Amino acid sequence: MILGDFDPAAGEATLDHLFRRAGVRSPDAVALIDPPNKASFAGGAPRRLTYAQADRLISGFAARLRALGLHADAVVALQLPNTVESVIALLGTLRAGMIAAPLPLLWRQQEIVAALRGIGAKAIVTGNAELARGAALAAVELFSVRHVCAFGDGLPDGVMPLDDIFADGGFEGVNAASRAGAAAAHVALITFDVTAAGIVPLARNHMQLMAGGLGVFLEAALAQEANILSAIPPTSFAGVSLTLLPWLLAGGTLALHHGGDPQVLGAQCRDLAAATLVVPGPTLTPLAAADCIAGNIKTIAALWRAPERLAAADAWQDDATLVDVASFGEVGLVGSRRGRDGLPVALPLGRVEAPRGAFDAVAVAETTRTRHGTLALRGPMVPTQTFPPGDAHEPNDFHDTGFICHSANGGLIVTGAPSDIEAVGGYRFHRPTLEDELAALDPAATIMAVPDGMVGQRLAAGAPNRQVLIAALQARGANPLLVNAFRPRRDPVAA
Image 1 (spheres, one colour):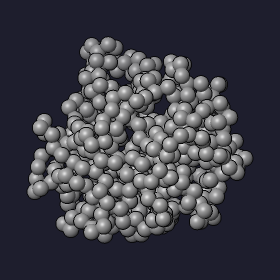
Image 2 (cartoon, rainbow, N blue to C red):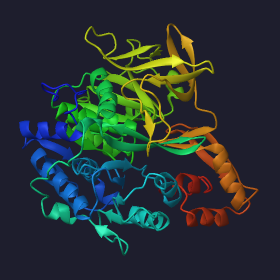
Image 3 (cartoon, helix red, strand yellow):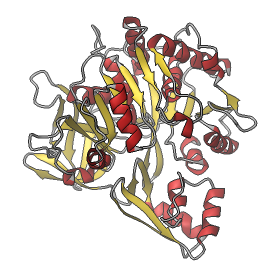
Image 4 (spheres, one colour):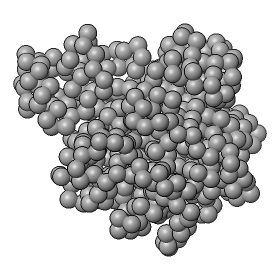
């Protein structure tokens, strides 16, 4: 465990401190590895960086943000695919003393504007020309955004290119931002929860982020310098907790996967000798059936963004240790090892510890069932405020997740999603809002969520004139998942 001799709850420990400690110990060790098929979705050759190389690039990105005139605690929105650049950009933003606001990859103009309008974002950083076009359109509607930057080729006019950071090899050093108080207590990350009230920005400091990652790290019993292969991008609290934090705590190698291609993922498992695999929970059975989980995978962390599906998951029969991570929107998450029978276990009622059942376990959260029959969480990972500071929860208050649950054998089993919230893959939609938006374009349009074997649910929609409605949605910058819901399934379209 790379935490060494200081307490992760102490004011000294930030995500950047964890990275720097790993770099000091093993500067020439491999830190980050790109997906092998990177050219197909982001352009450019895959990168393989040592800790020393990554450190210079993180400093180079931080220096670029400061050169733009951005001040400490400025909000920088990040929308990048699961590549080396996404990690460099997030850690570089934090090293510059700024606040990172990762955006889901499929969000387009409409959702980006809704998310960023109230948080005063000063810059948007994206990962390719398509994302840069959407960001530039969103920036037109956002008075606060002064800069749109992007990695990749063929960028639109007015978008600042960032590839030269890699061409120059980065920057030797960036001084820490001067801010009062403990560094770890400053807001580090803003993520966005989709609720009946709209898109809600939730702020977390370094200590809250570490609490989420530490729970996963301990429950999975990851070894120091562990190799991790992750298909979960760091675009949410769950993504940061399952991908970024375990890597920083272990001080090993993080290999990234993008797109869910089972053949590519299987090849990465074999070629990278990855000991730990991080994947969406619904993909476990298809991946195992396709023999994509190589024998050198010792531990699997499976993310369930629709935790109500977990109780019905197939029994796990592989030799690898499986840790189910139930994610409750952006409020929090709970990791649990599968039982000896291979079946999922109930959530603890009350104190949540990691690793569960160990004599030296660490408390990472607390659960309860509300009088409305929903799951509520509190603890060091649960955010206590929106951003900018407005609605606040006292640290000792429970935060209602909205997920329906019932008691069973002294624990809790999640049985339903929050009212009117539809989960599609890693994305959440408020169904009444979707229906109202569609009715404004075409009163005859219909939409619903239907079961899907891979992602749990998908959107299915209809309209008298699909093509006209598709064009209208695209003109408004709608999410591709919504747009593609109106396309016949026999005509696959890349998201």
